[in-house]
Image (cartoon, rainbow, N blue to C red):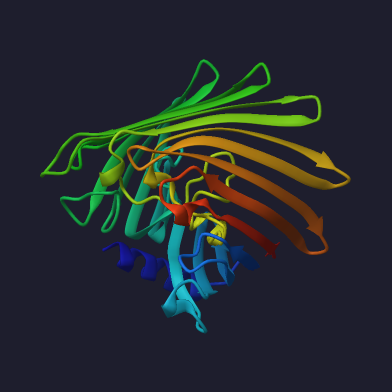
Length: 338
């Protein structure tokens, strides 16, 4: 049904005078020396181009996204449609329908996951935003291929608070974020009850950040009660890490593991700008799987160049019982938005 809605709106827009058509996108190319490769040091090169064709007519927008990369066999040497959706308003209701990416809460359990035949409806009642979301695929649901959740969001004591509940899959996500006296605070708690043999899940996230002169600092903690059964989440990274999150930033070649591989991550980052460049250092103390104690250290250098951004980084875990994780990964990449 939702595909019919998308097709009907797209056809209508194509047959009328378009008020606005634009093309936007991003691309990257990266090279990395991978010290954690099973056979020793190994060079890994990757590239991606993402192209968004956007058509607007009144309050309705149609977005068609094409992607070419060498991370997915189907997209290597070819361009594939990976998003196709509309956004519009029907009276006071905001509508988004089609195939698109969705993040639950702050993303600690599920960030930027692809959804098929999804429909999102939201409206404001006073200062409260009410929402309904449904999709044919996703939501981390083990019992069914589809998922439906309801949400309520409001500003409470200066903080943005959102509660999402999926009554069928038996999970609830509560998140809050705000800035108080110059200190940014973000927190999330995800809990899923045991259903159809799937064990209970509990994930918590806390992130605090601020500035001390020219130094920006951040402290973050992630806890995962049932690391073995966690919903796959390879795009979420703490503190802007390039060591954790294989699919973050499109695809990070220097990543060693994903956030769901850890039962605990506790880290701090400091960054500053020097001569137009940004230097960031990240240190984490982690529990890989249920008991493997490891530390992570990263140094990330970014510099704006003509037409894009250049990033160089060193990324290393230490102390793991799995020797393959203890190597040093070095990478350089160039990102551009157009």
